[in-house]
Image 1 (cartoon, rainbow, N blue to C red):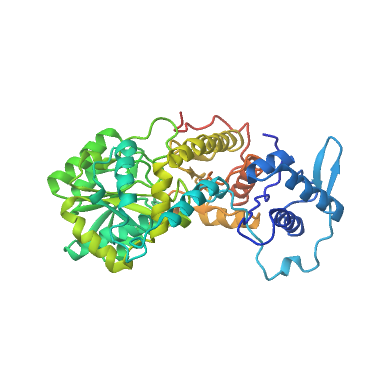
Image 2: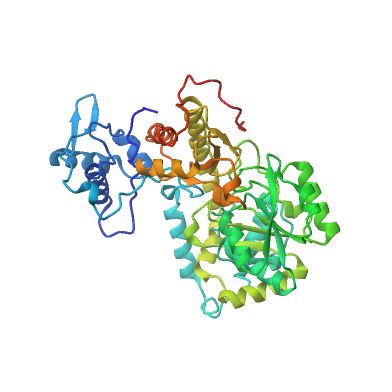
Length: 480
Ligand SMILES: Cc1ncc(COP(=O)(O)O)c(C=O)c1O
């Protein structure tokens, strides 16, 4: 990595827009200079690097750079690359009513939109629409299309060791709706409480409450949810992400997996298994789903949100027999059924092997981003303690004790960087150790060092100790 590329250079291109990619790139870069996200003197990434990150032709980047040189925003020096020129600041820049765009490099949980396999997806989608019969254009089945359910039952058995048949799969609009449907179905059967991990995905804690269930927080340590505390609590339902607890990143230990499955069987309890990012396990082959250990007591939920993109809104449930009818009824009452063509496209996408090829392609790329992030944190900020690095698309980074999360977020914003705090994911937000979530799905090689430097500057501005490469031994990080 060549160091020193600008922090704010996170260019987003909208390929569906009428204006061409080149004019969008020009506009984005011009605005970045005007809004001072690209500082005078900052060095631009080489055209080859930026082109590969944006998945566009190098000539497009060269043309955009050339245009901005001609306009006086950039200057190119033979052998020294392209740099940002000093342009006068607009007189009312500080009072501008439109808020400056923040650098979203550390956004959590989002796969890189540049990796979305547009051509393959379009091919599958087109083929699905082309091949559709009159029957497909009738009222959709609440359970979902049989083509997708059959392919998923097979895929989940092979890849996640889920034990289910096509009949036991229900297609939903992502894991979030899948959880809501199960919670509503269980509420109608008389359930009133549900254990949730503490910390857990805050939106899901609100979601289960909105379905009429009282969330009961159960602690998570480095081995995952504390099953002994779950056993002590008077609950008969739990929502858990055993493969990679969110946001702490803990993986449920083999002993606790067995204990959790035993508890569910003995207590006749229901486990909702949130399997949101199991495909991105970096240290070993992903561990099979918990559902395989207790298929009668586990509802397994997955989606394409992390592997492909959350905008697709396609997810699934593997439901035990005794609950299946209720879940299908509830899904029907919610929204009749999930949109048909996306399901048929996904069925083809999985069946033709494109899904597996895509995972094989992007997993090492995310792993490389994670490694760069860990290395940069370790060398530049040994006081920050990252954890949960074995899987997923984000790190849970504990802060020095004297840094308040809110101050850090404000300081980062001041420097043009968006950072997500961890506190809201805890049941008692104000009693937690200060921490932030640092996503690496969207990180770019050309800007990572600057982005980490901006994060560290924000920690310092928020009152933390001065960090640097010589500030002591790096903390242990769970990474292999
Ligand atoms: C813990 C967790 N589960 C599940 C999801 C995915 O939800 P969905 O499939 O509804 O997009 C997310 C997304 O951010 C998440 O953080």
